[in-house]
Image (cartoon, rainbow, N blue to C red; front, side, top):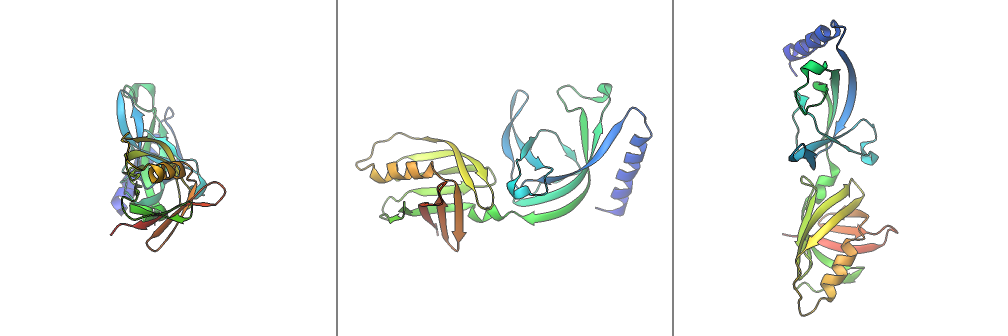
Length: 225
């Protein structure tokens, strides 16, 4: 941020503070590295996720439906920012808009999000610790930017939402699938059941493991070349 921009923001804050009817506070947020689908009035939109907790790894992220003036979202980066929260007078609030105006003061910190390391396409090699055939092996595409998952269970294509994701935990939401019946449904059925029990993960090199709530390995993958 340039000295001129910082001075302009400080001047704006001082001007607002001189008006007895305007109230503002300063807050610090962590902004998540990806946006999520959210409701925006009559339609759908992509919202920032923010938390005021220092421990962003275990924080409960909240959808942020407003705009932070002066802030630039960067996919894949966790950003710690300082903002002013200004309570607007009723006459200054547009229809269906927030009564609080958010302005960036400065970016305090930027970090690469560790969960971006699994943003890739993976092919299954093991189910519940047992090696499976490479022919028609299930696949898993993890899109951490969109918080979505896609792939094939070896017979049907599927897609769904990633409900929880941090540097250790991964939990999938409802997963939709096509409904073909293949000659042998053993692997597809085992894969579907395992995927729905996912609770945590580990990545080493080109290998990704998924574990259940008890820490037992349920799926193992190799990165697709």
